[in-house]
Image 1 (cartoon, rainbow, N blue to C red):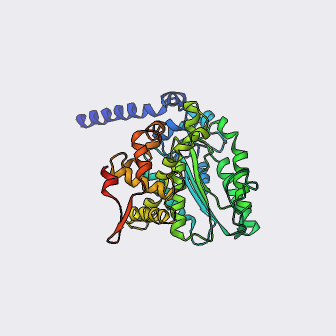
Image 2: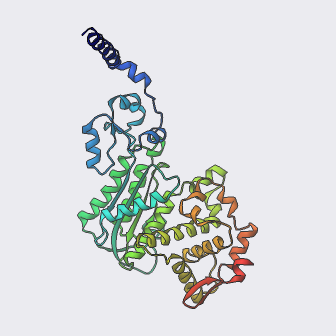
Image 3: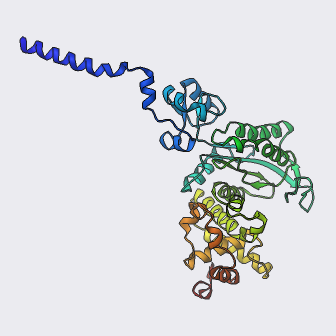
Length: 384
């Protein structure tokens, strides 16, 4: 019995010591919790963000965000810096999608968004995809005077006035809910939302990648009556690639101290990689492997129609040039597909048209042949 008593006493001591740790003051706990100064560092540890309470987490989940971790202590440590809209949640990392177009559900579009983001080596923290339908063109030429200089054309409306209002509101509310932008970046939100509003209300044939800020970007497009669903999918993936590329000309120009317009001769590489990505991802989504043949066929037919086409003329021949560059070992498909070429501004020097290898591509991208039911670059083009 004495032995038994001693064991019980020893156990009591252990329990007492163990439980004593749970009665430390809250301040002691808070002192041991890392304070995060940016959403980028917090999301590395908590990829869905941190909520103050279950109620706050459930509310953002109902709005379409991924449910964040709930921790009042974590929230209390960094919320003054990182809960910018005071909704009880810090740094929600989001992928969202909304389709207003019959034939493409929001769920399907979200699948496209997920696929594009997951392909990237260094994606932004937030990405949103949005599609709406427009009808037939009202005239044969773009209307830059209607769209502040942008070369879009007006089309007939497909959406009702109420649906147009909902589409406009969706983009605006998405911007307002972003938590991963700096205060300086949020100053442009109003103007950005106004531009998108003009596109939607004017039924413009727009396909582009608005980026409210570096950490929060998007791909949006109007699905025209002339496009089938496959073309719409390819176009959406193309624009998403622009949105997911970290350093395009708009960001690189101020870094290297040049005007963006002075770098227009480099747009061929950005457009070619985006078009390659668009056709690759659409084929992958459809479980097809014909994307290279489709790229070469379109370029081949364009060149048949106009043999004088230059490499900076359209995305069809620019994507074909990517095929030639891959075959010559100048670039790799994997680095196109994960966005690696745009992780810095180094690509501007590498793919400058004045470089010897780029001169060769500009002179030989047209050498596509067709034989035995296949399109391919001639041996002289690949090995020359």
